[in-house]
Every structure is written in structure tokens, then in C-alpha cells.
Length: 82
Image: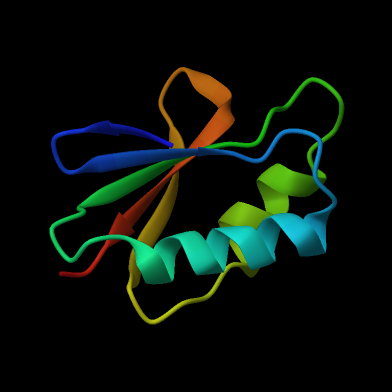
């Protein structure tokens, strides 16, 4: 987990969809209240299952919005409520 100001990063490469979503939900729940966004590295070249799950199937109370990371299809940004 890397941290830059109010941003956290998580790498989900190599995980199955359900395992990735479970880890991501736990990661979001444990993020400090000052966290504004989480960068999710899910990859793209070997398929889009993780990308689609993160962008369309992920639900958690703290999530305000999930968007693609501009210029990188292998990453998504989760914007959190404070």
C-alpha cells in the first residue's frame, strides 16, 4: 500500500474477481477518514474482469464515485466520502 497525501493505492493483479472485491472492500473500510481517493491497480492487458468488477460491481458506504484513471485503462480511482 503506497500513500501520497490523502491518496492510497492497492494492487489487485493476479486475484480472482470475488477475492479482489473482498480485499478492496476491507481496504476501503480500514482507510483513514482523511483518505480522499484510492487508486486501484487491476490491470487491463489480460482481460477486463477485474476492471469491470471494480468499476461496476463494487459497492461500499464510503464510496462516492468510481472512475477510470485518465490515460491508464489498468487503473481506476475510487473517490471516498469523508
